[in-house]
Length: 268
Image 1 (tube, rainbow, N blue to C red):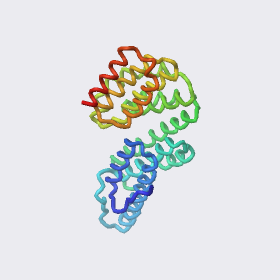
Image 2: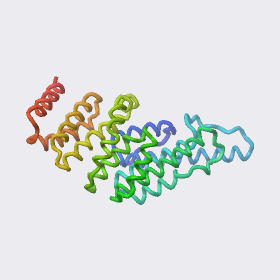
Image 3: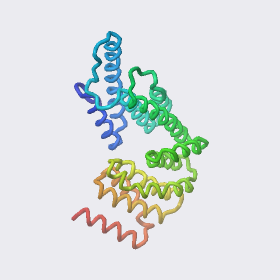
Image 4: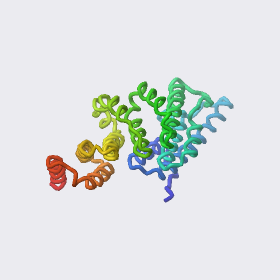
């Protein structure tokens, strides 16, 4: 479905991209990201002309550095393409934000954005490699996560997705980052990274299930369901409920009672 994006300003498009990511609307992200990139490109062309003519340069009412919008649009588009399995196209997006140093007139904020997207581009290339089953990319990606605490949670999601898809063991990775993720639970909630948080719990449950660890899988699902209810995350709740029902006959009596109690709370 084509979205009508005419007349929507750049910062509103950024908000739409964030909302679409939360809803896992990958096709929507492709449209919105292209629109944002096109609009910022037009702004930059005008900026270049005004600067060359010695005119007062307009900031177009943007809340962030122009570098941010170039990088964010292509970064989100690349993630959407990666989620859709279109890895070659995702790599093309990465090439558009891995070096934004060509942008003129950058202030300190813009220079910082250039460095940020350069690092994120390298990390996202590792993610694509992992999605393709190239586990040799994992050590370098782990080095990135160890130096970028705010990326640990999304990074663990990518690692779990790859491990589930290509059936390899990441138990040691889960153990390494468990304490950090648990200690930052409130951060993920207050910073509205709810989708990341619930997905991590759900994928961990799925990973345990695939590897035959049913007891821990069900415990993780119960935590995912309870967190989804608390955080009003319908997407996470649906996925966790489906997997729980698949494993219902393998639950302990305590686990089943906890699940039924949770369902009663929802009905009330």
